Length: 100
Image 1 (cartoon, rainbow, N blue to C red):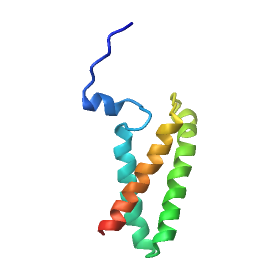
Image 2: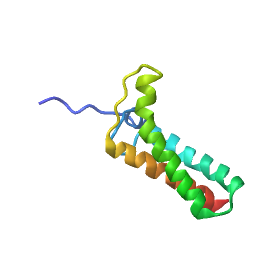
Image 3: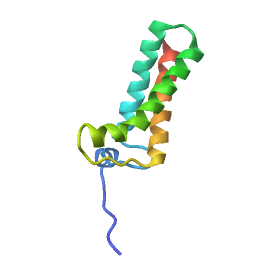
Image 4: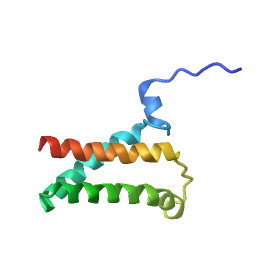
């Protein structure tokens, strides 16, 4: 049995975890940005939310292909992390629409 490694908050967030990692912040801010863009384009909340969810979901599907094919780097993401990335993006979108 090995010793459990102590990790600081930044070290923990930088690791690809199942649910929360550094990229969760980026996905939240992406949702805020998409909320801003879609609010400029349309005032229809449902269309904007649907478009945001489609965009974020397509990115999560395309992301591994981009890293492997274009950037020639290894990339593996847990499905649970992909789902939370979509949720954080949606929460960012909802936060923007709620406050602005």
